[in-house]
Amino acid sequence: MKSAAKAQQAEDSAETGAQQIRDAIREAIVERRLSPGTKLSESDVGNLFNVSRTLARAALQALSYEGLVSVEKNRGAFVAYPSPDEARQIFSARRLVEPGILREAAARITPDDITYLRQLLLEEGRLMSERGQTARRAEIKASGDFHLTLAVISGNSIMQRFMEELVARSSLVIALYGQSTASSCGHSEHGDIISAIEADELDRACQLMLHHIAHIEADLDLRERKSLGLKEAFEL
Amino acid sequence: MKSAAKAQQAEDSAETGAQQIRDAIREAIVERRLSPGTKLSESDVGNLFNVSRTLARAALQALSYEGLVSVEKNRGAFVAYPSPDEARQIFSARRLVEPGILREAAARITPDDITYLRQLLLEEGRLMSERGQTARRAEIKASGDFHLTLAVISGNSIMQRFMEELVARSSLVIALYGQSTASSCGHSEHGDIISAIEADELDRACQLMLHHIAHIEADLDLRERKSLGLKEAFEL
DNA sequence: GTGCAAAACATCGTATACAATCTCGCCATC
DNA sequence: GATGGCGAGATTGTATACGATGTTTTGCAC
Image 1: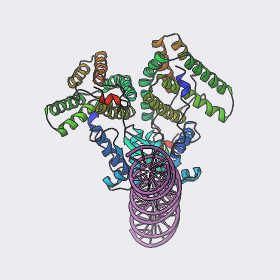
Image 2: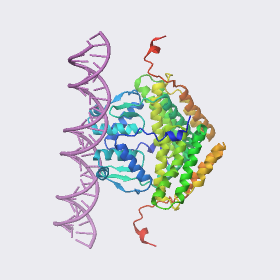
Image 3: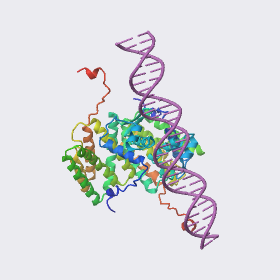
């Protein structure tokens, strides 16, 4: 068997048009070109991609199933604005599933996969040292790709889809509540995890993963930002 | 705090019409009134619910995101027919997440929740002893509700949604590959798990859960049923 | 009777049209 | 000056219409 990670890119492609729009918007959200709360009106989306509202609507619906946009009845679709509680749930879910995914991935991993992961890391490191918006966006994506690739290697496409959702939503949460400028502070931690897998130290790898997730979460400021557009907003 | 499990039923209701159709079809699938492979044409669904194809289509799309129906481009939607490999992935995913959910649920469980769970079990037992199709269907649902309720109690709505998907798809798998007549053979196992939680024996509860899932899976005959409408079908 | 081609049919993919609902500004009123 | 209703505009919810694609059937040739 070859590397499971690389087979990934072979998409069915040519999906039903709405899929392409969905993917485009998702990418924009994950890369933070679209901020939480931004309104995504069906007409605007349709015009932007030169399709009818029908397809725009379908794409937005799809994104709402992934939790990336929230559609409010008769009001429209908005880029999701996860509440602090939602944010905690997202990371709680990640702590719940990622160790398990890691274990399954470790059981099936091939040398090719490890090579691929290390390559990913290198790329990530390179982007970190670079300046500029595009580099920043690419870095955000690369950081998530590490976790995603582990899910791919695990061979369970259901968990893989779930992780895609979790990583995408995590990106939203970090955009909203992240404090440190370095978006993917724990770069080296990814490398440590791979090393632990290579050394067959599974328990340690899981611990590292948990710490890594906790580390990301620790960088968030999850205090209720209740509207507070009232007295408190002006008394200082 | 009161019982988390009961708050569940308070739905937003009145969702956008398509939701109702989606829920109706999902229920039909989970209760096995619709068999895997059944064609769900957009027109038929629309006529059945007295809505246009637009809404029918939206509902079917939604179900395809949950993996309960598969839509094939230009051919139509069908009740999903999970392959043996998919079936294995579904149960693998359940083994991966359910112990974690159980742990979180145990940490937040209230006496009211336990009462509710035991009530669920009683109902399940009653249905098991009853005869008839409707009882059988209700039993299937009740069996899944136990696992779902644990997810509700865990307080993580993301994991809850994921479990809903997994339980629904499990029902499909059992419909396809299940052997034993008793659909939810492991009824007593549910009770054992609750008891273990009550006794604060978390590790044992997790073990029981894993055994329970393995037990369900062991009842499946996951051999490739390749068309076999050929020679093999007649040589005996 | 068998095999292939083409047309008829059914079904999906997408666009457009109309109805329902919400938003927001304007004016009258208190 | 603030408040509440009313109407125009904007946006979503749903239905219908038309073109594209796949499937089945028909019909002709062999």
